[in-house]
Image 1 (cartoon, rainbow, N blue to C red):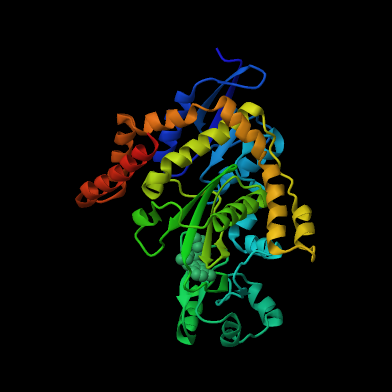
Image 2 (cartoon, protein in one colour):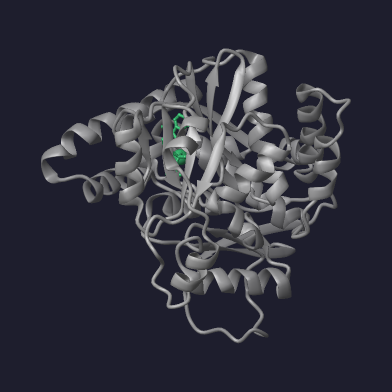
Length: 411
Ligand SMILES: Nc1ncnc2c1ncn2[C@@H]1O[C@H](COP(=O)(O)OP(=O)(O)O)[C@@H](O)[C@H]1O
Ligand SMILES: [Mg+2]
């Protein structure tokens, strides 16, 4: 019998691969002892969707959410359990608005990050709202789209202000493409954003709590090949900056499970998409990096419940802006300042000490399980569900090979 028991809720959509992996490995982690010598056992349950009284008490200590961005009923449940019950959430449900990219662009521009020039244009087509015609007739200024585009500069990207999954994103090289894309945007609100051309590396980093994995991303390839298995593709200084930016964005918005895309040209790091809280962690996307993602998720969630880390819904916006607005500081000095705030938010030192002392076995649990028959069966069934029959053999070979490579490197 453990002294304390904790329950982690998984709020899920269609995926079954990483949840099964997480559940199996959490069971294997077993009891964890804290600094006072008390033993803690942590279990996971899947969250179901049903009517809830706002005064009901949930049974969860922490919830990992992969659904609420798309599904409003559980989103409102998350707000309720955050406000009323202090349930620990990996992403604050109150900064969802910023996950619409636009607010995140604004905040990071104010912090001085090298976000490309970005303009928000009004809707192309009238909204389906009886008052819109009157309002737009009275207040919408006519504007010259071509001149606006000229000021951003070609080539550029037109993309939804609240985008995700590349939907509605187009690359614009000339006036013809500009009009075609704007006409097609209809009732979607669009940004025009200067393209970062001829970049050296597209880095996509996945952050879970205080842990970040920076991966080399190849957006031009099919999904299963986008994450290259490559190490040392950034200089230490640029690698550090990418990690700092990922951590700062997250701490600023109180996100702890998010991915961040930066384009690196020379020594300049340009963030272009960093509001992907609820990121894809499917084994068929992350492959070689999947075991890392699971171990980080296990460590951070267990750390949070065992140490009783308190959720911090309040944001530190003004502390970040005080650094941002100080004209005596260079870009590097500002980034250092933000990073200190972020490291403090994530309790980096305490976390590392706790992991070394109490969670040293997690890496072995993960390596053992990833090497097990159970995991290979899970990988097999995921591939069979995802790809048409004539591609099964090819993709089974592909993903099993990448997992073998991970086991060789980490076994
Ligand atoms: N400013 C930019 N410069 C260069 N490429 C870009 C830029 N903006 C978007 N892209 C390309 O378009 C893709 C999708 O845009 P992104 O902003 O990431 O939207 P989504 O949220 O749909 O992923 C990016 O992964 C990148 O390949
Ligand atoms: Mg993106």
